[in-house]
Image 1 (cartoon, helix red, strand yellow):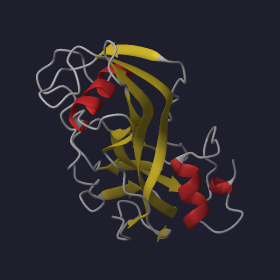
Image 2 (tube, helix red, strand yellow):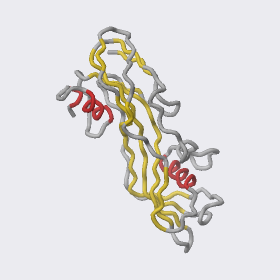
Image 3 (cartoon, helix red, strand yellow):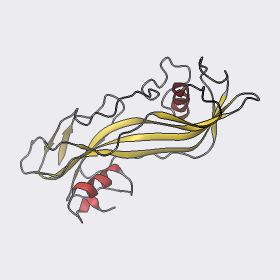
Image 4 (tube, one colour):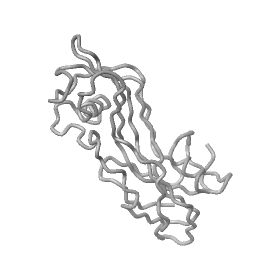
Length: 219
């Protein structure tokens, strides 16, 4: 079955074909350091961020009810139901809280390769704590085939604990969270998802919307 699909965002996206699962990403847990971006609100200038407990994973954000398609070229009509709203936020656990949340998220963007240090507007969307949630209604899908189809949406979520310190000053610790990829996918309930692993958005969507025991719902 061929799929023609409009993705949900103009940022980095992924297209998932019928019978395939969305790409996943793994995050390392090793401690790494990067120079902080100085800001007027920072507890000190020229400090160092240490990152640990980093997590990068694909998260199912929306799914539609299964839809029976009996003619080629049909457009899907079932709306996505939101299951998860990704967050862009910094939670401070210990130490002075004068560190700018945007600066923390910009440092995380550099650490994860989302942006390069010194770029103007480094990680602008990634570091925006007022970033709007993924728009689940901004897209349309037509398919060239027949079957029982489920449409779903997902994001790649990034989170890490951090420690910010400079000189003999009191360090600041906390956790930063944002997301870097959002997209949409399709699956056909009667078609197994190739190399499906527990936790993948496509598999989770199949288990929510397909009939129990459907081939697509089996890892």
